[in-house]
Structures are given as C-alpha cells and as structure tokens.
Length: 459
Image (cartoon, rainbow, N blue to C red; front, side):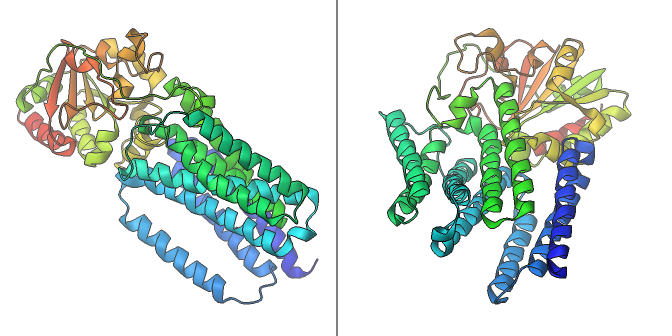
C-alpha cells in the first residue's frame, strides 16, 4: 500500500472509533450533544480519508456534490423547526438510502460481470434495501408533514398484493444473484423495491410513526453496510452495521413501549393495524379558567408536566421551563414525565426539553414517575393524548389495550392543555378528559403557559 492508502485506512479507523463512541454517548441525554459532535468528526475524517486515498479522475462532480450537499444541509439545519424534526429525519433516511441505491446501480452497470458471488449478493441487497427505504421514508415524511393522510391506507386484498410484490422482489434478487447477465432481473428487483417501500408504510398509521422512524433508520444503515461490502470500504461496513442494528434494537424497544408487534411493523400491514375507532366515553369536558389553573399550580407541593406533540407544535418548550422555574422558586417540586414514544420520533420530548435547557435530572421515565402520580397535586398534560389514555390500562377492548401509559389520572388533579376537543394521532377518544379530576385549558400551549406564568406571579 502507498502512503495515501495508509492514510485512508488510518482515518477510517479513527472515524470508526468516533462513531462507536458517539453512539455510546447518544444513549444518555447528558452526553448526547457531545456524541453528535464526535459523529460529525468521524464523518469528516471518513470523507477526508476517502478523498486522499482514492484515485480521483475528476474533481468536478465531487466538488459540486460537496457544495450542493453542504448548502442543502445548512439550509435545512437553519430553517427546519424542531417541530418538523421527525419529517426532516425521515428525509435524511431517504437521501442516505437513495445514495446507497445509486452507488449500487452504478456498480452494477460498470462491474456486475466482474463481481464475485458474495459481492454481487451484497450489491443486490444494497440496492433492494436502499430503494424500498427511499420510498418508505418519503411516505413517512409525507405522513408526518400532513401531505399524506395520517390514517392507515388500506384496501381489500392488500396483504395478498404486498406478499406478491415482496415475493417478486426477492425472486428477482436471487435470479440476478445467480444470473448477473440477465439485466431485466436486476431492474425488476429495483422497481419492485421502490413499490414495496410505498406499500410497506402506507398501511401504518401516524400513531406508529416513532417505530417506523427507527425501523427506517435501521434499513438505511444496513443498506450502507452492504454498500461497504460492495466497495470494500471498512468504515461504511462498521458505521452501517452500527446504525442498522442500533436502529433495529430501538424499533423493538419502541414496539414494546407501544404494545405493538414488531412483525406487524416489519411487514407493514401483514396483520392488525391501529385504525380510527370512535368510542363514546360519555360525560362532559370541564373547562378551567386561567386564574383557577394558576391558583392550583401556585399552591401545589408537587407538579408533574407531561409533554406531548402538542408542546412541539406550539414550540412551548421554553414557556414550560419558565413556568417550572417560577413554581420552583415558590418551593414547588417540579418534574417532567417522559413517555418513550411521546412525539413523532424516538426521544422527541427529550430533544425539545434539552433545547430549552431543562435539567436532565428533572426528566423522569415512565417507570420512574408512574408510582409518584398518586402523591402529585397537579399533573399538567401539554398536548399529549394517547400516551396518557387510561383506556390502554382499563379497557381490554381498546385498540391500544396493554400499551404502557403515563398514569396521570391517578394524580389528585389534572390540567390538560389542548387546542380543542379533537382526538389524538391514533384517532381514539381519551376518557381522561372526562374524569372528575380533569379540567381542560384550551388554547395554544405556548400562549397558555406564558399566561399561566404571569398569573402565578400575581397569586
């Protein structure tokens, strides 16, 4: 090996170590920010090593790609709000998977006849997984953005159609693997993979998007790992494998948190899917005035804030922190209850509250905070719905029966901040809103929290 090759391999080793350390740090909110910086450093090292160690014929397309990618990435980082982070992440999965698929297509066009059996199999797997992840991620982004309806899209015979597409895709893959000279098999596999990506996600409702997000992350990582095998690139193999398996493990944990079957999510509708259900809970939602809510908070001993996607939509993370600090200055014990699937992607609430400089020591996971609700004076639910729905615990006929929830209904008093009387993302009615201990404070969450803080100051 020449000096440039040694430099490339050395930077790949450094990048791999940084990726592993970053993944470890991102498992804890207190070190997650540093973990992201390490990941960025690892990616920078991998890019520099590749540019130095590769025999580049022309720099024109490379420079154009770096410039265009940097401009798009910088623009998205500056302009995309935190509320749109889930769909932005889905787009990143789509871009990464498409890049892997395009690399595979290019390698097929140029080198397919020269490849060994193992390399050709990796190429087929890379293109197949990259293609279905691309379209699947775009559908997920569309559902999260509201461009596509959030309800599961199903039709008669859908399972059979999906199975035929899947079998056709896999059959084409194996035929291409055995007969690389049959070009039509490769492009049939590619086309069916794009179609299957759509069919994989459309039967899944928006309530399941946190699981879909982590699963698509896994697919994109595995596609990158397969690209590494095709190109003989060690850092791609390591980084893709880390991404793929960590994403899959997270998917399993998210399914457990939602009491959902991993096989249901994996096969996108090959089984029961949560659909809209209209349940008549009866009763009346009791509205509370701003002054009465402020009075309850000001004279409480223990207050627990329960953030949901409504907090993200209203960008109310700073407002809730200011109210919490005001209550703490009055001697009130304040905690935040975090459900593992609150929001639209894994860790969504942690990210939002960290942005507002809420101390990690104030964040409590579901298993930690549930035993404390009976001794909590006021539980303030901010834009959460399904994760606090007592039907999951009490109604075995509910579509979310068995899903672990934050048991806010056991608190002495519950104040729910909502824009209106609509249902949550799953379309299910929430009996919590009709319980005697619950009152509703309608309006924009950010505005309501800011006015509550002002009202508390005057109590």
